[in-house]
Length: 95
Image 1 (cartoon, one colour):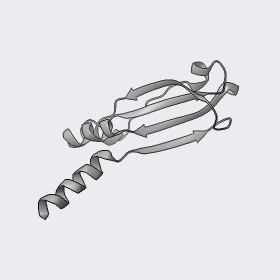
Image 2 (tube, rainbow, N blue to C red):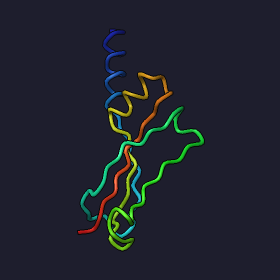
Image 3 (spheres, rainbow, N blue to C red):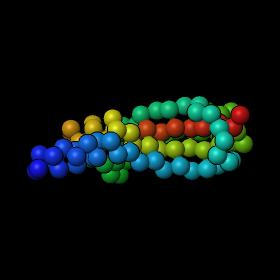
Image 4 (tube, rainbow, N blue to C red):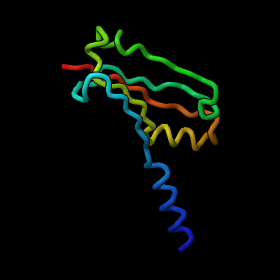
């Protein structure tokens, strides 16, 4: 019974993902760029940037930007015990 509960908790933790979305000019758009950004120790005091208007060819063409934590990111964070904690950044452009 104990092994079953531990296994279920491990599967739930590794399959979880988070997404933060900022809608700029609506929410319809095609994925234009995706980048895995490197952070250490949970990203404490660190910043990464991506110029969305440059990716889309102008600020009026940016639909939304997202920051996601995929199952791969969660696994890498878990295996390194929080030392390496990558995040995915995505930019969507209007059609």
